[in-house]
Amino acid sequence: MAQQSLKRIAKELADCKASPPTGMSIDVASEADMRRWHVVLEGPANSAYAGGKFGIVVVLPAEYPFKPPTVTFATRIYHPNVTNDSSGNICLSLLKPENWKPATRLLAVLEAVRSLLVEPMPDDPLESRIADEYRSDRNEYNKNANQYVQRYAMRSVSFDAAANEGGKKGSGGH
Amino acid sequence: MEPGDQQDDLVAQEAAARDYQPQLEGPLVGKKTPSTAITEEYAKADPIYVQKTMVLPQTYSHYRPVRGDGSCGWRAIGFGYFETLIKRGNRAQIEAERLRLESLNEFIENVGHIEPYVFQDMAEETFILLDRISDVIDNQESAMAELATAFNTTAVSDSIIYHFRLLASSWLKGHTDDYGAFITSDSGCEGYCRDTIERPNIEIDHLGITLLVNVLLKPVGFVLEIAYLDRSPGSEVNTFRFPEEANNQHPSDVGPIIHLLYRPDHYDLLYLADMDLQVHRVDSLSHNFRITEAPMAFHSFSAVGDLALMIPNFGSPPPGLAPSILDVAAASPLSYTPSPGSSWVSSPFTDPIQQAPPQTSTLPATVPVVTQPQAAQPRQQQQLHPLRFSEYCQLPKYVENDTWQEPTFQTSSFKNSHFNVAHYNNPNFQPEEYKPGQEEYEPPSLRNSIRKRSSV
Image (cartoon, rainbow over all chains, first blue to last red; front, side, top):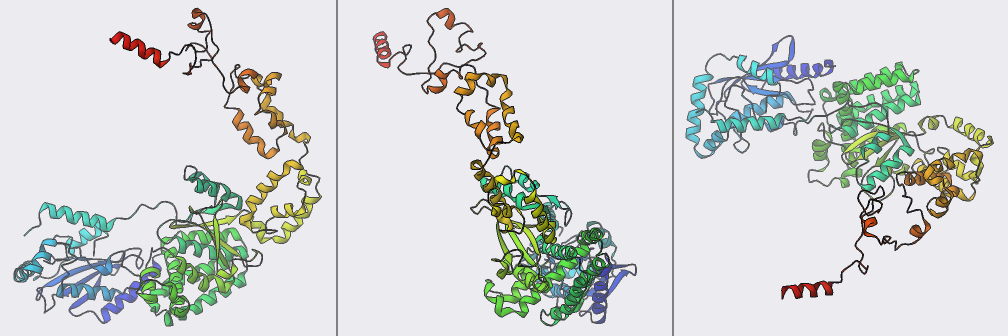
C-alpha cells in the first residue's frame, strides 16, 4: 500500500537533490528508509545563524502526501519558531495539518525552513520569550543566537538526538 | 537561558493541541446495515427526527456507514460510483470508464494545473481498482469484496478520493463561467479549489458535489440522490438529485441512482428497499401479475392503482411509497370484511377481569375495538393492557359519572377499617380527595371566627 507514495517520495528526493535550496544538502537517512531524510543546512549568511551547520530531520509519515511531513531541528537553535529543547520542533504554517496540501512540494518545505532562519516569524512563536526579545531587543537576540551557534552548531552535524526524539513521537511539529 | 516550567507546560500543551487527533470509530466504509439502526439511534431525539427516521426504513431498507473523518461525502460518492459499476455488471462499461478517467489525466494537468507527480500515483489507484473489479465482474460478490478492501485500505482509499477531488477542482477551473457565481469567498475559484477541494479532510459542500457529479457521474449516466435528514418540517426526509435536471423525472427515466443520507455534516450511503427489483424490473412486473391473480385479501384494496403504488417503480417515486401504503391501510375499513383470519382479534378479551358481560358493555373504550380495522388494532391492544380497571370503576355509576364521589360511610368504625378504600391497607386504596362543599369540610368563615374567638 505504501508502494504508491514511495514513487512520489523518490521523485521529490531526486528533485531536492538536483536543485537544493541554497546551503542545503539532502540525503536519506539510510537506503532502506526513504521516508526519513537528513538535511544539513548552513546558516544563511544574512542571518544571526551565519557560520553554523544545522541538522534537520524530515520524516514522511505513512499517510504522506495526505498528511504533512514532520520537520525537526537535530541541532539546538535559538529561534522564536523552534522549540528550545532537544526535540527541535518547528512552527511552519505550511506544515500545519489545516494548511497542508498534498500538492505541496518538499522542495518548497525546505525553502520555507531556510527562510525562517533569515526572517523569523515572532507573531507565531513556539518560544514566546525569544519572540519578545526578537521584537524588542534585536541586539540581545542576535547575541544569544550567535552564542547558540558557537555552542551547538560549529561541529559536524549529528542527527542522533532528534532521531530518538522524533522517531518516538512520530509527529514532531512544524 | 532555559525556559521555565510554565513555558514547558505551555509548549507541551501546544504540542498536544497540534498532535490532537479525534478518535474516529469504525471502518472507512462499513458493511451494509439495516436502516432500522438509524431509527433506533434517533429514538430519543426530537420529534421531527423520530418521525423521519421511523419512515426511513420503509423507503431505504439498508445503509452503509462511512467514517466521519471529513472526507465522508467524497468517500461515499466514490464508493457509490464503483458499486454502481459493479451492480451494472458490464465489463465493457468499466473498461470504457477506465479509458475516460485516464484521458482526464491530461485535463487535470492542463486545465487543473496540477503537476503529474502529484496525481499520477493517486489516479493509478483508481485504475488498479477498476481493473480488479473488471477482472472479477462476473462474480458480484468478489467484485464487492475488492471494492470494500480497497476503500478500507487507508492509502488506497485516500488516493482514490483525492484523485476525485482533483477531478472536481479541475472541472471547476475549466468551467469558471458556469460555477464562479456560486463562490462567495473573495479568493475566487482558485482559492476555493485551494482551500476547500484540494485540502484533504475538508468536507464536500453543495458546489463540490455538483462538480464531482458533473465530472464523474454524469458522463456515465449515473444520478446522485441525497436524502436530507434534518430538522426541517415534514414527515419524511427531503430528497434532491444531482444533476439538477434529474429532479422531476421518474426514477425509471433517469440512470442508476446512488443514494446518500445526509445528516448535518455527515454522509452515509443508502439503499432502496427494492434495489434488486429495480435492477430486474421486468421480473417485478411479472410478479405483479401473479399477485393480482392470487385469491388473497388484496381485493379489499379496491383500485388497481393502489396495488401499483405498492410495486416499486410503478406509480410514484420511492419516497412516496411509505405513506401510500399507510393510506391504503387507513382507508380500508370501508371495504374491510371480517375473515376467519381475523379471529385473533378476540384474543385480548380472554382476560378474566374483562370477560364478564357487564364490563364490556360499560367500557366505552373496548366496544369499538371489535369493529376496528386491522390497522388500528395493535394500538388499541397496547392501550388496554397496562391499564387495569378496578372493579369499582366498572360499575356504570362510576364510569358514566364524571363527578364521581367518594362513598360516604356513616360508621366511624368502618371508616377507620381497611374495608374503607380510603384506608391505606385497602387493596384498592384510593386516597380521599379534598372536595370543597362537602359536609366534612369546615367553612373558612367558621374556622376564622373560632380562631378569632380563641385569640381574643
